[in-house]
Length: 306
Image 1 (cartoon, rainbow, N blue to C red):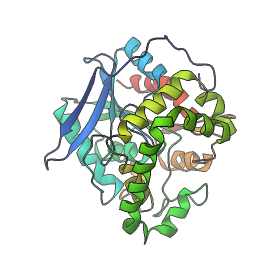
Image 2 (tube, rainbow, N blue to C red; image 1 turned 90 degrees about the vertical axis):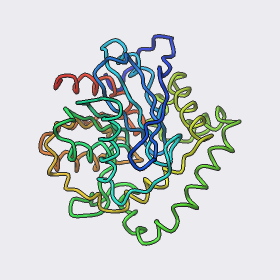
Image 3 (tube, rainbow, N blue to C red; image 1 turned 180 degrees about the horizontal axis):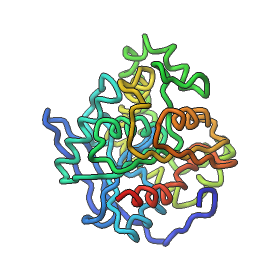
Image 4 (cartoon, rainbow, N blue to C red; image 1 turned 30 degrees about the vertical axis):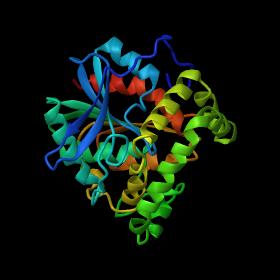
């Protein structure tokens, strides 16, 4: 249940495989896989920033119990994935289809946190016969185009910066990557400071030892490789995504906290208005990253369509 104290088996379930999936043009996408190898596959799209292991321990345990294979996918320029800036968010769906083919995944579910949400929706539209259902946790809404979010947080301001963001992407990428690498030796203290100074609605969630360990492991390990893709997300979110959200027919489950200061609730409401076959769960008094608490329920809802 979102907002309650999560179960923890006390056993850290590490990925059973971390690998690189090669695409037709020679680029690779980094992946980490959790749960039984023969389980029903659910692709996991990390937030911004994030990487292949940004999967909460409770979700890993839940996947193991239910026979679900969770596949964490790194976007281009993150971790092991080759740097590459898509023209539009929709262009990412072709890479996801290739990844599914390479891993021999005929049909999948999708879960995306925050900045992973737009990529989940793109795959829903582009691959309707292969995506059974999807979940978006605290997802980003569009900042440009006819379906844009009118107001709400910093995301709508990105369209004002769109003319200069492409020129700034590499310097911004370098700053993000260097910042994480410099913070790595004192990651514990940096994380504690963020929790103390960050949004109150996320403090209880981030104070859990298993969540702290997951976030630090994910960002520090990927930071040794690359976190440049976080800047690419910012550029893409300032543009029209390249598709009409209202054309999505795949079932999409949305969770959004009403105390989210990073991606305000208006984004979740806008996505729910646009997607015909969607359901929005508004979580009282919870913030942005706390939506990871909905991961187990998201897995359950996706499995009802299998």
